[in-house]
Length: 272
Image (cartoon, rainbow, N blue to C red; front, top):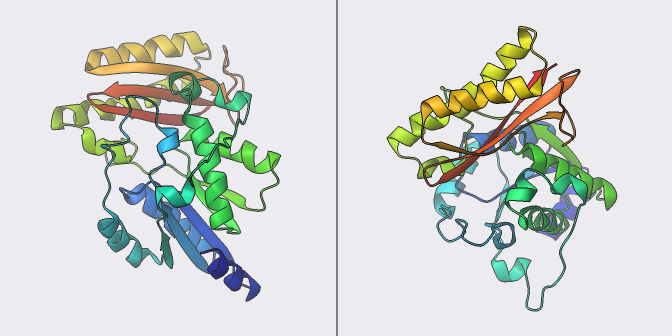
C-alpha cells in the first residue's frame, strides 16, 4: 500500500485517504466523494480498531461486512480499499500508544478513558501505512477531529486534514454505523438528539446566551421524548473543547446519549 502511494505521488498525483471502521453509510461515502474531488487517487481504509473500545463496549458486535463495503465504494471512485488485519496493525509485543493531552480528557475522554489514545495511535499508524497528501474526517466526531489535528500538528505528520460536514438522515439524525442497533421506536427517539440541538440554536438566535438556560431546555426536551440517557451536554468555544458559560462567539453544542443499545454522539455549530 505504501509503495502504491509513493509511486502515485512520484508521478505527480495527489493522494487522499478516508480512514473508517467499515459498516459504511452515506456519511462515509461523502468523505470518499470529498477526497475524490480533491485528489487523483483515493484510498479508503477499513479497520475495526480494538484499542479504541473500552471494556464492555461493542467491539465484538460492531457491524462488519467487507464485501458490502467494497460494493458501496466502487461507484464513488475509490481506487483502493485497504483492510489490514489486527496483527498487521498491532504486531506481537506492541506496546506504544499516544497521549495527545488535554484535548482528549473531557467529554468522550471522561466517559471512554482509553478511547482517544486508541484513536490517535491507529490514525497515526494508518497515515504511516497510507502516507496520503490529504485525510478526510467528518464533523460528527467533533472532539475526535481536534484530537487528530493535535496529533498531526504535534508530530509533524505531513498529511493535511480535511474536515467535512455531518451527513444526516431526513429527520436530522446524524448517520452512524451504530444507528443499526436502534429499534423502530428507538430510531424515532434518536431523531430527538438533533432536534434538541436545533432548539438550542433557535433559542440562541432569539437572544439567549446563558449556556445553563440552554442546557436545561435541551435536557427537558430530551426527557419529554423518553428513552434517552444523556452522558453529557456541553457548549464549547468553536475549535476547542473549552466550555463556555455565556455564548459570546462561535460555539458548538456537544451531545452524547444512550438510546437503547446505541451510544450516539452529535454536535451543532451555534453562532453566539
